[in-house]
Image 1 (cartoon, rainbow, N blue to C red):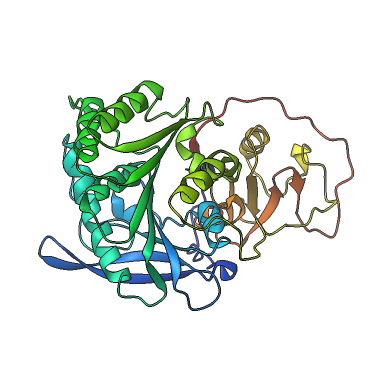
Image 2 (image 1 turned 60 degrees about the horizontal axis):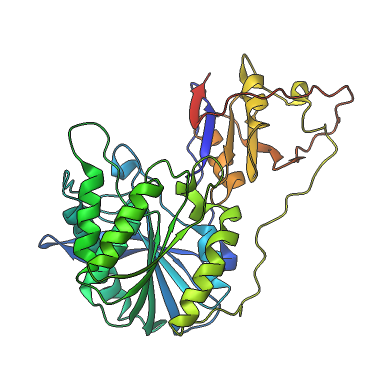
Length: 391
């Protein structure tokens, strides 16, 4: 998940809808599934290559943020999806029951991690039963993947023996409990042991050394329990990644970690790995000569202590972006699927005027008739924070 910071204004305008990615043929559909004896509609992102298919399928499963699941945004996994679409796959990302705009209510299973995974897997099964009837889906070539809570759901789904599913990809799978007396680590180990004893599907697991949710010791315990119960899993323990390896699969810089191992895994399963669709990795936003990146005084419209937050932005790793508005609103974001798009949307939530990009990665991209001529102010290091807001 990307780190972000916002400057708040008292008269925000509505946030713009996320622009659908035409290059990936992005669609958002509501998929009907049965859940608890009632039908719910799952808000689902679909990425497809050009043509009518049938395409091999990756179904990618999201994690769980703190707070109300209905307040969680639609997950797109654009970086990961791009890698699969360029190789001819369709990628489907369902928001499970009670998340984002999906109907129904999220059911908390307390400290029972086995039940957590299986209840989330119910929605994956319903989604795949729907997709199994779509002509553009290759029903014999399916991969199920997931990150964090979605990784746990993926491993649980492996016990369902769904036709056509060839393998599972687990990106930092699990569920961390906050507060209370739940021994959630032990419960996670018990859950994956239960799943490992009931599946014959091969899986590949990615866990980083500095994962702030599931560290190396816990990842190793989970993997050992899964394998000892009869599961087939390769653990890729790839060391530290940026500030928190938990979000590796959502980062552009993470591709060089997960794709080579995933490519080997897919080849072993007889799944395609060669690029067949020409895609650019990102849209390049042209650099301007408005000011140097580290000229903190040159950033327009900032008020109060906002320039200190721009100074903090300069300490962040790429990909990153900073946006401002004539109303005084500002926002920065680092990493994630698309920091430039994210930062514009976040800024606009708190601005009565249009927000515009000021800086992207290591370039100033601000367009203004009068460039700033002056001595640059060097940015001093500041302590990184995961999120903050300010006037």
